[in-house]
Image (cartoon, rainbow, N blue to C red; front, side):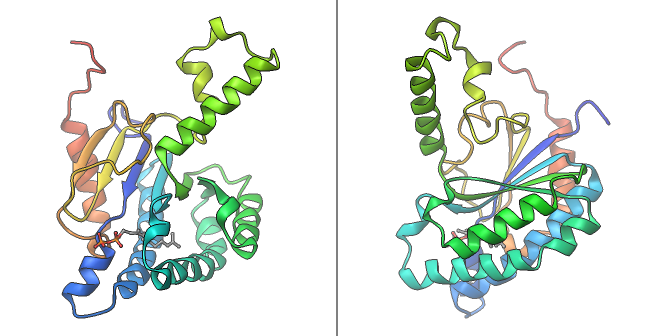
Length: 234
Ligand code: FPP
């Protein structure tokens, strides 16, 4: 593996709604086509040799969308996840979720847990779906757990450092994000992987997520390879 190849790629899959609207269709159509692109990009990323792919599918803020859109996204998630077993097996993908699943319908949680169990021994790419994920929420939850462990004397406050803190994040078993891609033309992080993206390289696409292709993923990686990462040094 090349030195400057990104191990962990994270994607903010933005623009589904605008894309569909621009075609005179309902926003939900964009989400449906977006979900098919999730499959294509999962396959491509695994083939290209990415070790960790994290996709922002539903944020802690997305609950504030119209009820009908939230309902559609939940139903889409359930039907699409039910079809994923084959994709993960064929591509040696290990599946995981980051986020707070307690807000989800138990049938969705059941499908998720089933996929996690069935793919546990796959050793190719790890695919993380960020569901009901918020970076600030994740950090606050981690702080609470750190306090709890300190109170119960499992942790000595003087010993807490970045490495120890990271053990309390959803991403405790993965490296930080190397490359963060956002489609849809906006240039912001939107509460995604705040801690883990401290030194990520950002690549933005004006095109919307339903139009994103394997060639775009390769182009983002090529762009990443050109960047000089100094991590605050010289
Ligand atoms: C952002 O587009 C997209 C989302 C909030 C949802 C992303 C979900 C998918 C791509 C489908 C996921 C499905 C599975 C099975 C993983 P937007 O609605 O914010 O678009 P806009 O900015 O044009 O309004």
